[in-house]
View (cartoon, rainbow, N blue to C red):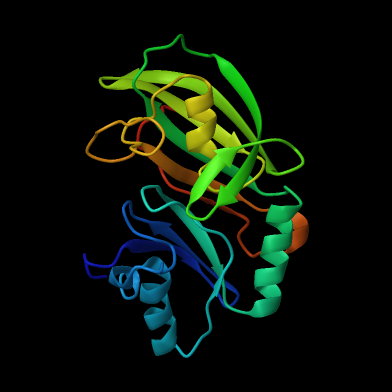
Length: 215
């Protein structure tokens, strides 16, 4: 596959395709014309067009975030997958690195209500926002900070970034909420697991974490 393609295929069958999105690429195009041809959906759509197959968006990752994404090849499968996400039946594991050196084996449970206003996200109340549940654990140190394991029960825009910010930590490379300059934003989605009742041929997808050390 060309180095210019912003993804790697992890798995594919007749109903789904699972890819690893590289950092600094949009999942779909935005109102900025520069993104019309350079976005993950565009590249995958061209790939599927050659195979005479359809492609449907299921979920997204932020521009700066790398990680695993699943796409459906039919509208009914798209609806089934999205229902699993909505019902919080999908295990979604991320990793991140914060600047602060905090004690290891600490756990943080963050519940927020987030509201999107245009391109921005704000913390608000239950009446105006959507619930965002984030669980964070400090796993190991690396030379630039503390590596975190993160699990999200909900999938709100900027959810992890705002959860880390609410704890007073600095997500490395997060220019929006932490004003942190780094070579990249240190946030990566490394594992997706779907429930057995969905009937996927392969229910779990993962890549080796970039920063956390798993036992």
